[in-house]
Amino acid sequence: MSTSRRKFLKTAVAGCAVASLPLTAFKTLSPAEAKASIGNDKVRWVFLVDIQKCVGCGFCVKACKSENEIPYNVPVTRTWVERYVITKDGKSHIDTPHGGRDGYTDPTIREQDINPDDITKAFFLPKLCNQCQNPACVQVCPVGATYQTLDGVVLVDKKWCIGCGYCVMACPYGARFFHPVDKVADKCTFCYHRINKGLKSACVQACSFGARLMGNLKDPDDPVTHTIMTQRVGILKDEYGTKPQVYYIGLDERVR
Image 1 (cartoon, rainbow, N blue to C red):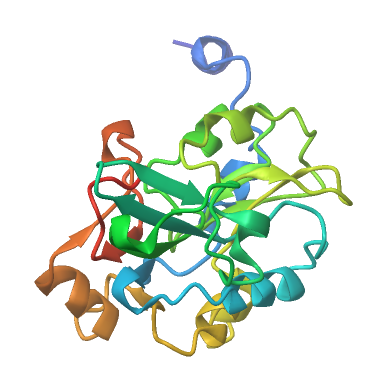
Image 2: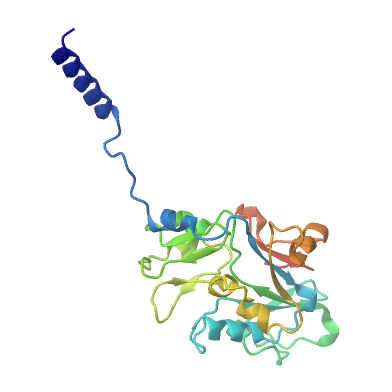
């Protein structure tokens, strides 16, 4: 075979190989895919709430609003505290005025006076984004503005969010809302900007009773991890399969 013929066949084979490739040999990453490498894969941030220690003071809600620039008098919060009062007739009376921001000094619940003698149980329940292992909000975002970091925290790229609201509807925990100023989706981030500097999240720091704690689930020596692994803890709405990463001590079966 002559040199020119071998050269011709080599060129032809190379051309066929190129033709068999997909139309594009590269992939343009969405913001969510590009930012999925952010964070530390040796860390899995988790949150632990001890319901038995929460007194419903609302300091955590105030601290969160201040730290994350959530307008104080607008009825949206990244974290909130619900009051549960269970009466002898088996009914659950639940309220969260202003997200529990101002504490619970009024015994009236939803304009209803409850006789203290009829109460069988009462407690406060702090809630926040569950930073799910399988976050529905990430799955439904059509533009990749919502993404999950390597250390498990779900964040929102405010510059990329188009405000469609799909994530707000998809969250089974009601943890998302529209920021009244930014006009995009917003939610708790575990104070990602603080914990990455070795600081506590604002709500954890504000809680004087130790009802709110954060830890690294991948560190067996972390006190929070030890508690989760050795004590009876619960999660909210397990039936959705999102694998929430906010754990509760003392969770009552009547909690919604």
